[in-house]
Length: 66
Image 1 (cartoon, rainbow, N blue to C red):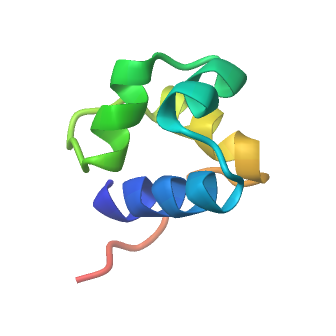
Image 2 (image 1 turned 45 degrees about the vertical axis):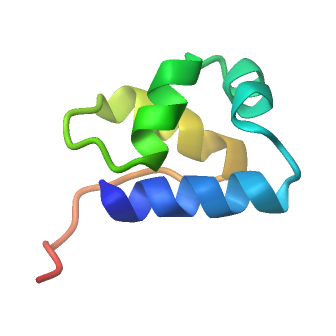
């Protein structure tokens, strides 16, 4: 999840959005956005995909990178 959190943070900043603005626009809670960007391990995939949808992306199953 840490990689996804980094991606979200990078793209959010590129878009010029604060965490508050991103949370409001994506329909997610501010706490969730903060925890996602900090790499919290126990987040919901549906909410991750809701965040990624802001950048035309989605999380899909794939091989684990070691």
